[in-house]
Length: 112
Image (cartoon, rainbow, N blue to C red):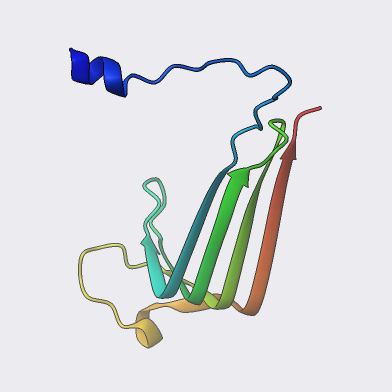
């Protein structure tokens, strides 16, 4: 019990000091990645590929604001009607519906 009381942390108020709002951020960086998505109600298979994918999200000093930033470099979206577990060929079984060199998507929330 002496060791626990030694390690116990308690907040003691400091006159004149205002603690800053916690800053929470997540940074995710992926290279040469792909996502195989099969929506349950649809007979469809979606393949999303990206050479570089960066995701940054977090809340800052203002607790009423938050944001999400998505950067995609050399990305593509392919669709296929083959939903089974068989091995598919990208050129034969998929149709390209989107091809971007660079995409930046910035979503900001604000609660006023």
